[in-house]
Length: 472
Image 1: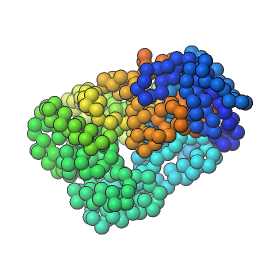
Image 2: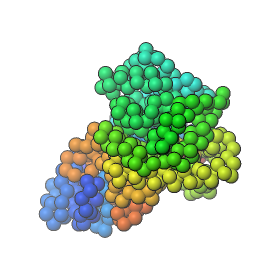
Image 3: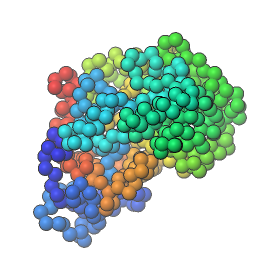
């Protein structure tokens, strides 16, 4: 099933819903939303909006209508190697756009399938391969698309090759040296390409904020050392991290966690406020990925009896166990380290709340496919965690709608429920402004003007289950 394999009606109308348009305006009850040729053409009181001739009318009285959701940090990989698996789960969960944070040729193939109508799926924005220093944190993974950059010339070549390969932006990683990091930013700026990703361990974070990098991902290390009264020593400690011969990322996470623990002990709110002001002034976005931090800091929260496991391939528990123990936990955690991580997660929530209060642009992202994360489903967990951090339900919703559209340069045609915007919509059975968890109460989804009703949504979920079990 695709959005072109079945004819999309020229004119469609959702009648009677409470519209939560994600602009920040209050919810508006009893509205009509007109969609013509995949574009929203009118939004207004049901009694005042005339219906075009031959309109397909969808009665959604008592429902709540929000924009389609965007997950701004995903890695759409699957042991099934069937793109319908991820695409079906994204759409069934109201995720109508994703930002792929690790560019691979297969992702470009999948995007072409979606754009041609061969596959029903979300809009995809695709990164370059990871640009990292040496040794790269994922260098121990066979066939891993990581480009090691150690000089200006290598930086220029890596950026050029990524753009020629179709990357929408450049993804930088943690171990880029200072010279290479600056060279990547300079070359990307010269070519008019955005840079996003991790902070470099080798460049002080305040300097990176004004470097031209447009978004920072995760809360690993970045903010707390720079917000510490002992900033110089802790930033130097980040630069001196040594990765082990094997499991580079696990070794790195373990060492970063120790520095984070020292940093929160000397955390100074005034220093943090200064960092947040700089992020706002430079118009730099932050994707905290609280969903993945929750399982890194509290791995005991991963449950293999979760009902969502039916959508995951049979080998998932084993791969999750490896990632959880060897990568996320860096091997073994002592009871003291486990307690420290539980406290660090509370710090992450508080930090995100302070960032929002300061006006930092926050983006909702999950870091799928980490342990305990499920395609599509986990974005709703991220929204819940953003509210737990202190954001209002409206601000959390905007982190998955309006803010991604602004960041991606789509604010004139996506991200809100307004005339002139693309018809990416989610119809809910319950009010997400009273409880953000109600974004999970999905009644129907519209993807680029294609209406997915309850029956077809059930088919998408059933397809994902079958593929996960090896039944194509």
